[in-house]
Image (cartoon, rainbow, N blue to C red; front, side):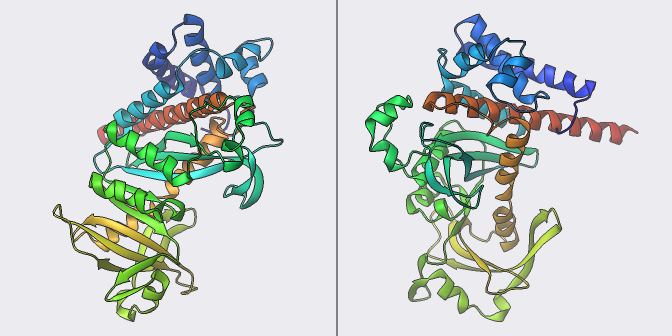
Length: 383
């Protein structure tokens, strides 16, 4: 909701904020901390130019950011319980049986060396190696909307191999090095245990290329369309070779022109080819290789491993592949509207707290928009 909010916007925010504040208030023992949480969320969805400590404090009527910083960094409350509340809130409001879980990461550019997890590492946000923090996220998408529901801060080995540095950043002693796919597997398992309604999972090659990631989904009997690198090897038709080698042998008739959804410039149309491999499971799930190539540059290709009910139309697999962009939209909206990347904190705990509340604020806006859309549709149907 960019731009200056209208009175109607403010009323909607206020109603939804009251409901969210009531939902999470049990996570905060002291009443003043409950109030601080509500104020922080209000600032994140409010018309605050930059959602940092000073400006959030000013929005809340504080003379300095001292209380805001204490709330986000040192006050006693369980961040993961609020994250669980967020996940339940999203499932309640936009959950559908055919929903999708999407995994991806985003970078947060940072100066210095003190912020937890910061270092010289590749950031897809910047498109290059930068001094930054990397957060791995899980998003939920359905026809009712899409938003972020879980997060993990990636710690490079340079951090986990330096206990003194970890202590200074408030990183718990039991936090050890974990790869990005491992962080993603943790988040997926939490979503499955919580009963988040979903029929599909999609992710890029960092995660799709991880066999343990795919195995979790297969055991859960949930469909997936995940990107893999061109170097991924596969046993297909008596040959064990790279997927790009297999794709080069596809006949002309194997390629079909299909849209994977609409983008900013209209329908995103590519040529797609699919071939099943392996034997269907007892539950009727069939694995496959899906390949996308550009209409203008046929050598520009992307490769996907899929797992779906035997007989699932290729058009459906293409649709799932094209839905991965929704997490990018979540990142963009949360950074622009709810201050996902505007924090000024260094500690492990403060990072997770700000990110969680920013995600909750974004989810609130998604719910508000969904509710307004439903009302417009009902009004249109009665006129």
